[in-house]
Length: 490
Image (tube, rainbow, N blue to C red; front, top):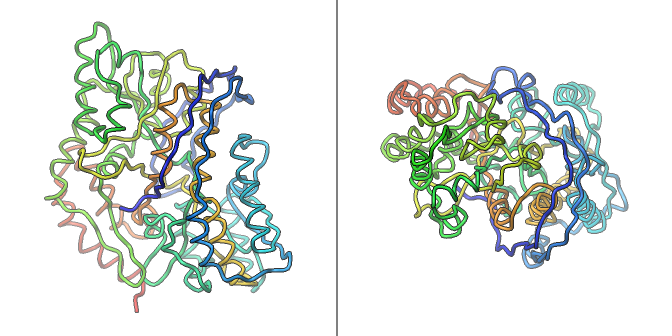
């Protein structure tokens, strides 16, 4: 797995005092519904207020100039005479910020767009549509041969839907496009590829922090346990599943009713998160080859033992719907949830911190966060674009200029508004720069063998419903046949 990573310097600040932001209640749990992507939406915060920092912190700017200088040599050197660039997106404020985007991130997006506009001599605009409306508009454009947009941006869950409808061109048709550039996420390129087709790509320009998950922890409970701060374990590369289980087991030493963990929005795909954070992938898809299952029962046997111990801990909170409120109540040690939870717990009376999902072992190189496929954003292009060279240059330039900087702005924004300590800043940086994606979620709706041989097998093996080998034996052949039916090679 090759996550997006960079040399890091970190922000420090004396204190971040959070202003009044009313607690927003989430009444539902996230449901992993592959059959109907449009019906699987999370409840929105109903009471939000603009929060501003009231204390200064010393900010150290990361410098990505060397990488950018190297990246820019991949562009065509064309100048487009002030030509307009239209990007249609289901989340257009990731392209052109609006008043819902935090000030720090908004400033970074404006800086990026200005840089790209001056570099290519173009003018960037964005329009927004919901995924189904965008699909109908793209279909109409393809039928009539009319221009729709230079680029489109949409959730990972719609790649297969759009691809099957014939509204996505093979991005390898864009002249000079380098899908393997560092500014694109390598696992994202795999997730958007099938056979000879590269349907969609993701990188720093389309990074959506709300799609990523973290372990929020109750700092007071950790102190009551008399155990080392998990921040130190992360820094030493020792924040592992075994370490997590040691913290959870220590709860029995405390008087009172305490829970090891709660998971609300992540409840139904928690095994998936742990599988990826444990260094595994479900599939691998390289252009020019048929996608294949990339895990086996031998290499993952001990990982599943640890995953089962975490997910089915008898001290876990059983009510997923109440997970966030229970954590806010102070009797839950860990809350495993998406980063979109931060605004909800920003003003909690509980002193909390942020950690990445634990690794399988200290030897594992990276902490990894699987992006939730409903919220993970990808770029694609409609076959009727008017200038393929311009689309290629803009797609690469947006991600080149966003390299590192977009994630840094998200971290800085969170440090102003949500985070409680300096250590959480470093932890959030790790999470945002180690996002992972997988082909199995992209094409799960295309053939039943895809989920059955991959994430369903992971979830059911974790739950002890059946063995992983039995799932692979049952569905492995069907998965291969599905690949031959869905994709062409050569």
